Image (cartoon, rainbow, N blue to C red; front, side, top):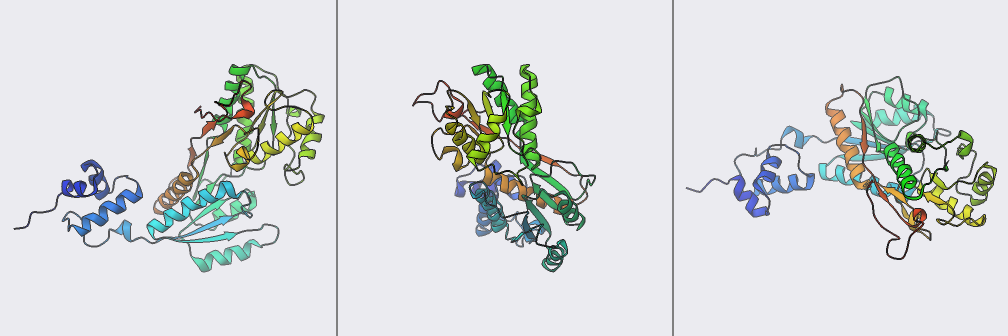
Length: 355
């Protein structure tokens, strides 16, 4: 009589621990790729503890709609994020559709008709910050997970979740670190703090850090122009705003790396050396941070993981539609580079630190 296949047998075939194999077969958390490998091998070996037919969870085939509120021009940030979403859907055999909504040109009724015809099970929303659009999207009644969100909270507390980086903690920590390391007290934020929740939380993180170190600060110490009317990619425009400040900033906290790079160019035009005369901090850790000298200190988030975690939360909401709105934050790492290192040398220009 042929000996029955055991979990130990499967584990030995795959060079995995018995505990990992048991978790994969019992529906407990393991990486998706590991779970798929274990189940495939268990079927090949005719493991009796596995149903011949796929489980109900395995047989679900969701249709997912990825909607963006504008073209995703910051490709260095969004490509790995969307790749994480795409890979998750591919591994699960989900259908993924994409739609770019232009609030100035596309009537919401057209978008609504598209959704009705597509019949998705859930929606991932990226770069969707317009409050009116968000409210209408939620009211369609589909489960939604937002990557980042509008600045102001909604009265609606159902049908959606928000996932983002831990922006406020990150900037708060670097303000304290730069004060401790270099006695920096005069900080200036550059960016539209009302553009989205992440920019607002980065601004609030700076303000809280300034309060903690006991420094003075006023709103007029910042450059907070609305990005619909101000070109943050224009060094001369930034240069003009810097000259309007009543004091000389010791550190510029920028809403992202793109703006940080523009600030470095503006400071160069003004004869201000980075980091000798002023420090510059960005966010997102994309190519702009390292495209030229000085390389910019920034905050890095695992964007592939962020995409996959977005999908895991969306599936959870699809399967548990009545759960309250959740706020999920993903930890970031601070990558300290030359733009904040006044004592930098060739050996430590790209030192990686975790705050």
